Image 1 (tube, one colour):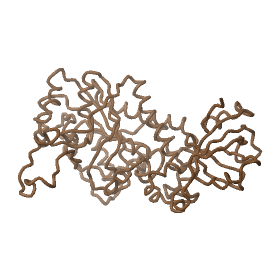
Image 2 (cartoon, rainbow, N blue to C red):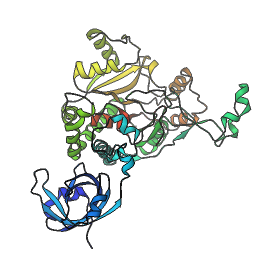
Image 3 (cartoon, one colour):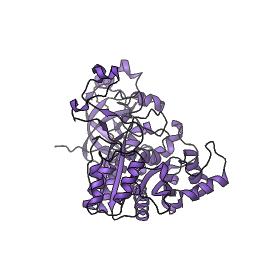
Image 4 (cartoon, rainbow, N blue to C red):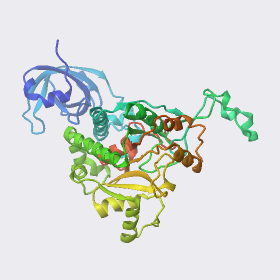
Length: 471
């Protein structure tokens, strides 16, 4: 029986397979001179060249087009061509699936440049393109490195609920979950209160914006935990940095103070970047060479940008220090006032212009941060921290959590959080409370940073944004 190999296996171990009979399968990327096929199976950015036999059936050649899926049995040979080191001299070819030529001209499978917007319109086919398949392979390796890091550092992976009754952030619109036909409930027209006891969960429920609060409860028993799952926000935002459905990584650690939390976040990000540099050379090199033609960032090297993250310790400054720097050094469209939430232009100035490498801003005003963050002794700021990256701004947001029952309850009341719904969260402060910390990393935003793509919709398989849930 002839053994089947991936194209990546053959290209990486070509000398071992020379003069051996091999079986490969994939999709045709190019077909030239009725002799040479460039075949790709998704395992690598590179194609393998198939040299057709002179005795091949002419009827079969007529069926071979770009996009056709085939099975090839042949002998692996050294290539005399300059573009590849090895090739397969075919002995047998069979076709799995032909391409509909009537619709081919309208598809993104055509071997020419297509806009990223057009690729999104055919999201079911864009996996076949070199740029998107490259991004998806990098996305996989980033996800793997995240699990690897936490596993090696003694964290336990937990799954927090997607359906919830609360808003962990205390702000922003949420998607409602219901089995009720809201359009046909008479009380809506009259303006009366809807009786959600008749709904599936007997209460009003939503898609979760974060698994943090549930993860905290687990950390207060298991010590170190993390979540890696989807989150949802019903914000009517069409920016290049926002999605309605996205993925979040949220570690929570018992007995951790803010400084330890910042240390963990920095080490975590550097581990991921280092892993990607070491394991995604081919795809990173492809993006480096081709990204400009996709109208992405100009005059930069992806690898240089990633190396910069590893080169220096992240600069740590308090929010108050950041405000002083911003007040002195530049005029902004959004005025700089202590107590305001930093805007993108402020973050980018600190990272790109002032420090020229990643920055951690900590001790934010309590008024712009969530209720669960620990109040500092000054009574005005909380033990919060944000990590700012070049080009992309905030990539991690976290804090030391408020472990003191009385202060947490007061903060909830001050910010109009329903403590009755969060009785279980308060309970964790009644039964053996400890200092603890955590943070959230937007996975898609990290992929966006590493790949250098300008629009976050181009780094997730099927983006969910306002007016877009087709695929």
